[in-house]
Image (cartoon, rainbow, N blue to C red):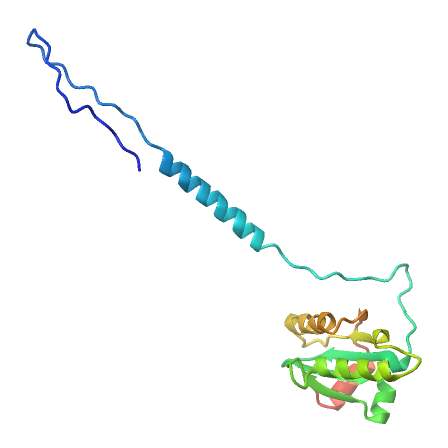
Length: 183
């Protein structure tokens, strides 16, 4: 704290004239410097913690907007409202014929992560393919929230998927969602 020191002794001069005592105005700024360093340390520390975390997105080179992929390696995930996910294997037409589609959630148990891992295991058992050949296609529905899309990207990171893409929902998929009453 700041302090003001004064000389406690009285000096009397002969002659009868009394002079006012002179006070020393020495201010101790050591606590202020300590507070400054504490504030600097606090702001440096909090700015280091609050750095935004980003995810690397790998985009295809060139102007070609289509990519050829095998039907057996494709898994399409459609995040819809209420934290539900509609998924199907291969093409939608084949999935509807062979009943290889379903709905799930983003939960840890029996969620979309388990579906992805099952697909990776099935690809790993195939002699011509490996689990890294899985192509996850994410097609957010209109009523999907931003959190649903982030959860789908989290599944990409958790399951170490090398190939994934964001694609717009096609009209046939919108009609199928309405027909199956998936909201």
